[in-house]
Length: 324
Image (cartoon, rainbow, N blue to C red; front, side):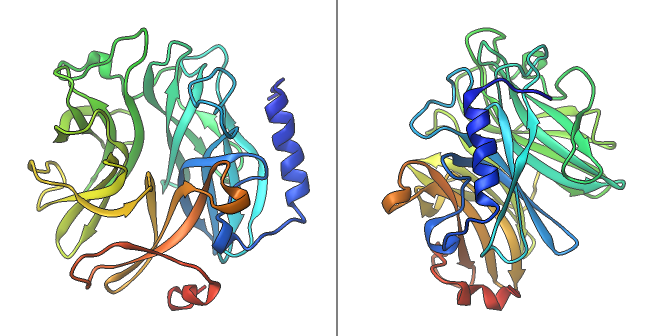
């Protein structure tokens, strides 16, 4: 696909220059040269971790036409060196996602990789679509319509003009079903994490809000993890903190005070677990000469602690306990 966009040409230049360029990514955080990295996912294939992420221009709004219109792609074996690849997925100028693409999330199922992503119209209305791949490099959309369309749901606020919130998909396998979580807003203006269910990853049935957060305008980047028989629902946007709530049932989280686990963090993915310790990746604003945009950092959560928090990793030696 040909993209006639100066930022895109700069990105290709960054890819070429970064083939031989490495920083101390543990300290500085990873991002393509000259661009920021936001909502992302990681998936491992044959010992290589593939990173897919929003890529954008520092100090430019994500809502500005021409920004955040493709996904960045990079690979690593050890999270110390990165290979930056050409963008792997783009807006469809003639489709329902002709404005922006946000928040990719990839799973493997049925010998195929499935990417769930937020597509945004030029009017800034958000919905969720799917693309598939056999090799993690070439992606094709599934169908001509989004699979999550909140304008059809009685509980959801989703006008088809002037913007609406339906983004940041996260998918888990639960029994014989796939459950998709995403951030949304109810018709009464409450921030929520909603849920949909599928048996084939293509046809999804709405299950309404799984968690309603009354103090937020909108939650960000939901993520569901199981820990000791409990289900932890993570999300950002709670007073600048990455937080979580707990439930016995992954279909519903009761009203409760979110527990903060990291400040200045908006999204997190779990890389590996060793007993009560998790190696996680997250994005936050860079520091020093890299403070012009968001970058990918690594941290550890110790769930055996009285008050677990994300402890940022500062050197490669701290990765050894996780096999890197």
